[in-house]
Amino acid sequence: MGAGKNDILQGTLALLVLATLSTRGPCHGYGLCGHIQAASTELLRVEEGSLYPALHRMQQAGWLRASWGQTEKGRRAKFYEITDLGRRQLADEKRSWAQLTQGVALVLGAGA
Image (cartoon, rainbow, N blue to C red):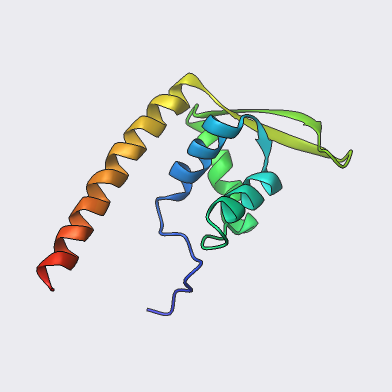
């Protein structure tokens, strides 16, 4: 396949971002990348080139709201916050992820 072990399965980025913002609160893009990487004990890596278009799509869908603020280092950055619609989407994403992982586990178990 050629995909690196740190590449995020397509379709899981929204789940990871929404879950992070739900538990951590408002965050800027670079902070989201760092949190996901650290929380996954370096198993997942989100490239900024994938993250920012996804954040824009999620904002357009009404799942996120954005506002400008200052980072802990005093730099100006856009901070993202999950909306009520985003929380409902997160619940849907979690259900879909549970079904997917259950299906994969069944297939893997069938081959044993």
